[in-house]
Length: 136
Image (tube, rainbow, N blue to C red; front, side, top):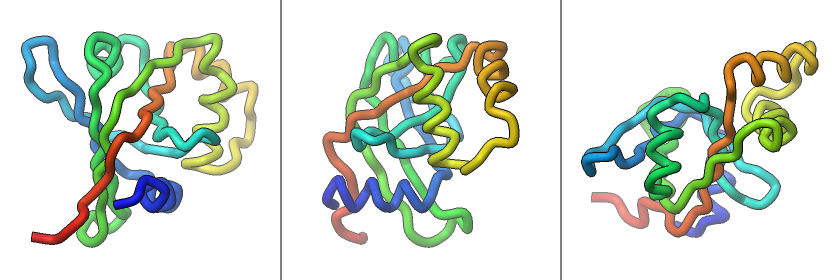
């Protein structure tokens, strides 16, 4: 699958599972909402203390499985390396992320305070490959 096709899918469908590597080499999965930023990276909001955040800081390899709201039907995977952007640098990218996945917020000052209170971070996955390329 072409990466741009994967980006277009993620711009329309935001439900996903993020898989990261645990310290002992296992796989940790989290339900997330995914967006696409202006540079074509797949974005996820998380908390500073979350396992996925700590896992990615140690090992940046990640995979997203993105699916439709109905769950059954079309789906894609995207994999690559991720970086974690912390506050205060993450604030405006978190605003962009919210707009991409949810639209308008009624009170942006309240949203920004919530991001600070929750110690939010933005995970940005630079895609290397996407699929599936065929059906089994």
